[in-house]
Image 1 (cartoon, rainbow, N blue to C red):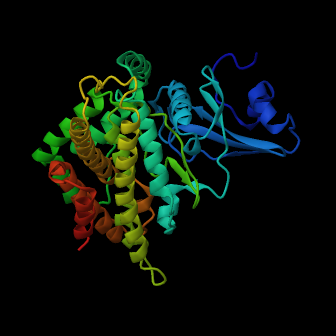
Image 2 (cartoon, rainbow, N blue to C red):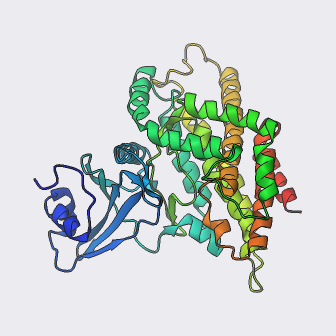
Length: 419
């Protein structure tokens, strides 16, 4: 067969590939005359093709052996497609309503064929910039996170199953190392990859690099990220990895998936909502001052944590006599003890969430990859003001995360950071 070794596909070879692959050709009824193909990979790492035929559609995602936006000077394993495919299947099995179905995976070609998440779905980040409310976002994301994180943890699984899964995902070390570098290392030192809104934030970036307390706390978060195989996390769960309409939420792009700390996923989502909140003033105009929208973002942050807490503990109660080996029913055998264990676990998870969320915020302001929420604010001085508020709040959250006892206190800190 012509595709027995890796090669990047173009539109022409893509059609040949589809013809040779029944699980894909059947999706478009084997008809090629009216096939529409569009390359839409706006991310940093992959080619993404949308294929639409008269009787069906799908998406092809192919991993390249380097970071696409930088080029071959920054090599990157194409094996990540394998981890993305198995994470999509695993998470999709646990939460099919919020994860696109995988139709086909080809390890040699580093290629995944999956459901096309059709219009009017858009990337959540773009919706947040446009000021669109998503009434079910907190409900859907809390459901996705509760199910995927709980069901891949030791509260639900035996240590035998868990170790086997951890060993498999240890192979995704290269993408973990990328996160270690860009989230936990680069922002805290002089690095050629760092950038920020200069000259306005020159002093702020320097302050991050010279903050010893911040560095102590970041070291603790980094060691948790590297050492704590708590659950199968998405690993890159920001608002650019979620597609939405008013009544649908789909989580995409889990190529950074591995067994890590749950708070890294929850924090990524909440931290990016906080960034969106601080960016709103830069998107306000005469027609819309964005005040009502900012209230909606805050409510979504609060609801996300509260609903997650509720759903996660409900799953725990439901499965407390199951095969999970973290808390054996023979030992944790009365409701009072069960309640104590849950409270302790959820409190630590809450603090992890704040710490990791804050670390993700900091790196988006003074690190290598920024967010469109801020970047699309044209006036640099206004952008810098928004970023500075977000950065100050993130530093507080990271350094004092243990002092926050509820999500309400976090919301109040966000509100006060804008005064």
